[in-house]
Image 1 (cartoon, rainbow, N blue to C red):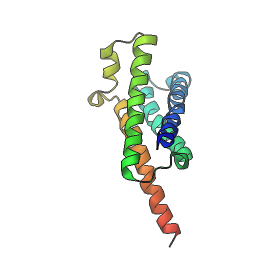
Image 2 (image 1 turned 180 degrees about the vertical axis):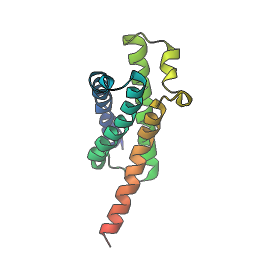
Image 3 (image 1 turned 180 degrees about the horizontal axis):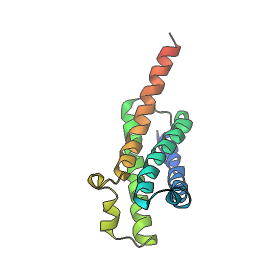
Length: 139
């Protein structure tokens, strides 16, 4: 079981890299065509798609068999993501806690919370999709 847990932890490591690349795309491309706030919203949605595709590509290596494992993996990924975000924001980018928490305020149109929720449910959703696909292909 420890190896599986390590594999699931290691599977998270490319996610911040994908997020940073997505942020670069937002800054270099999207913000040329729209205001920063709209670019952040669109960037959040594109990141969800990118992370879903990535998770689908590595899904078999996660070796998830049951819902509990999928939800636990999603929870660990969310905790790692939030930790990474707050460490990066406070220690490297010198952002205030209020500024970082504002990104989670969906009532003001910030979509970052949707990214976090998506990360949590991605392993579970893919487990259900792939389990159903296997059942259909075995018929």
